Length: 337
Image (cartoon, rainbow, N blue to C red):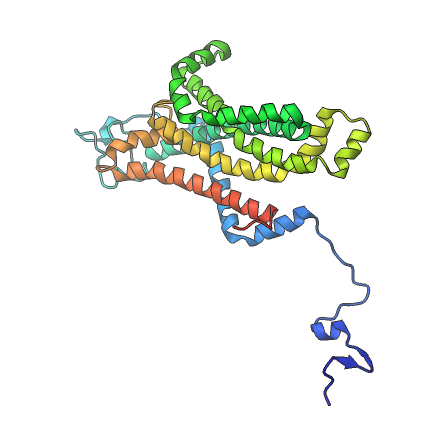
């Protein structure tokens, strides 16, 4: 009669015999750190890896833009009126596409579309990166101080966050544009109007964009400040600055990294929106925002000139957002996609 409970020779069945893959005696048990587990989950996510590839491509594109201009590979400022007809439309099909102009030319002026989009990517990502860094630094510092100190410090920072959120960011950008640029020019001595406009946009975006990361960091610190390593640092007489930025801050890299990748595309979109409102870098210096703004009036007659910067902005935003979602899932496996 068959043994219904898996007894062999009067004892319980060997677990190795039921698993089909017996372990060798003395085989080492390998353990993985949280970072290794997160990297394993990230590498298995094909969509995130594809998005990361696109993000790297856009970063390389932005980094090589100034080099391409310096070595004469592209010229985003050169206008050639011989490439447009009497009505200002590009000569030839598909917006003037040719071997010399792979993505056509700009209507009315005759500047190369590829050169302007390529070089414009540099300025758009530079503005977005600068504004993100400002937001992250302010938000992380205030979030750590608020969560770790508690009490009246936490209350004051909370009220500052509420007050900042009460102001509409776009409206403040427009309302303070003239005065803000004058102050930037006066105190920072920026060399020209476009640099002044770029610095102003970075400052205002950073000044109104830090609240979300501050709240995230504060929530993490509220639970982290009760852990043993923080109590140990207090008992050893460590200063508050050391506890905040040497003990707590290194343990916040995961939410900071995820928030960074999600904030970057938001500022790329913000730059494009501000260019439409004539706030920011002005032509002929290209950004993705002002190139797209200049293409709006030719969307019907020369659709390629409109779609190239629009698709570039959309691709950057989607790639960064998908990368941020993938990082969040890999670093916090308990969260639902």
